[in-house]
Length: 253
Image (tube, rainbow, N blue to C red; front, side, top):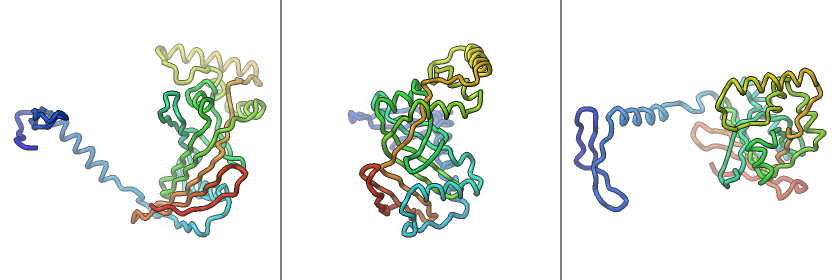
């Protein structure tokens, strides 16, 4: 940009608008410095700081569940915080992406399990568009696992058993049934929670029929191992449907 100069706390710069017209813009100097400092600060943060494990895709097992559980156990042993936490990505009712972090409930040959309230945004999204993605990230080892597939709700009996296994406070939160609604009064929330908790204590077998256990049945599972030289090792398992065998492909970084 030409003809830039500083006066007091402002920087005047000449910019070109989309119409092609030249105009002057005045930026606060402290805002400009802050913007540059954030960029420099982010670039200075070290990634993959510690030793990274080896990963030979050619030696990976034929079953991705076996490899996932191996990586999960290694993350637990390495002290990764909340290693069973994962990002659930869904398709919003407006067609846009949505995401949040949940806890993995189980994994077996059927798929990866988690639970949600059917009336919550994610519950409604899964009901309307039963496709989703899961992402696990274990930074101490520079590892990601990414899954894409279809969502299948469990039976009412299985969902009830999952809910009854939760702590009373967690079950009380489910009974509120107002997840993600606008909250104008924290005291109203606290009163409703105390009332729900009292119901749980009075009726230990009380359940919420909206609580639903889900299984992501994957069609793709990628295992991503970071490399300090950026030649990351990526292995993806693919299949046409749950009855087809898995096929493995290495991917470019």
